[in-house]
Image (cartoon, rainbow, N blue to C red; front, side):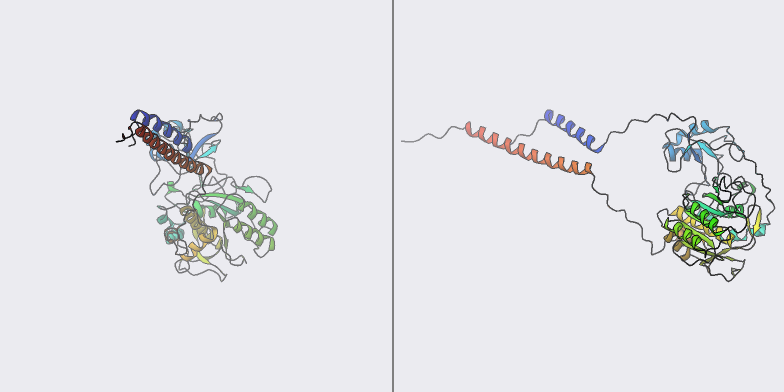
Length: 441
């Protein structure tokens, strides 16, 4: 009979095995890192969005999301209280957040939406442009028709950048605070693209991502998206300049590229630039007046009037409001305004489903149009039958996993060997203790 191992023996063995498992699996937590040495100059900060998971953002929710503890909201308040924000406002309590505000976070904050670097300059940058604040209310018929706000409980464009090739954008315009990146001025060869007062670029940016909540007007289809202005000129740019602008926009990290300028898409270099952008998995949205053939990842947009009728006979993949539609500073007409509605819709789709390719995103939008007109809510909330849920590929076996398997096998083998030796030893000992039977004679 094999005797059980004493408890005093089992405990040290168990401790040794536990230590081995911890060493193999890395169960011990890493030591907490110290704050970076450049924390004074470079900070971790978060730009407040329109909302999170269908609800307005507040400091408790932000603290829970990035710090893992809603009780640390007071730390965020202390770091930001009284500092002038981009729109001139100041943080005074846990709940009065405005989209576009920059919140400095504690050094141990973790999250994909956190940025690290010099904090954007606080305070309102006065706009050198004069924008009308009396856009007729009737001009908002495009926004009323599409009702993109119905999709914002699912996605508002957060995490998506929309590059706009055109006349540049006034990043300090009402309704665009915190939504416009610096961009570039390709026409001048140097400088930024976010300080332009001319052309329709600011109005297009407003349709894509604008939000002037303080004035009670919301123009943008995807107010959580970021705009990258690429200035190519106020009038029709030369084909070479257009191609360069598209190439720059495609390499900027944008997921959507809106060509807002009048372009000669039949030019070989321009056509090649568009194809290269699509190859980079960027959805290209272009006014239907541009002579460009249909392609996956490309959307040619025609302008529709209030009755849904196209304003011209150009070949279009879909329509969007493009006759006297409201935006920042003006009510505009033309296919470029219609294209802005579609670019915003693509931003919503790619925000809701980041795994979709450019071709899949355009197919989603085309499959959900209503009487030929883009439908942002349907595009975001409807999953096409041709888009099965992605199945994660099995992870390749790691060297750590293989080592663990080998060690387990060795442990089992040693256990069996010890058991056999112990049984053999006990059997021999028992046999030796029994005297052989005597003989009779």
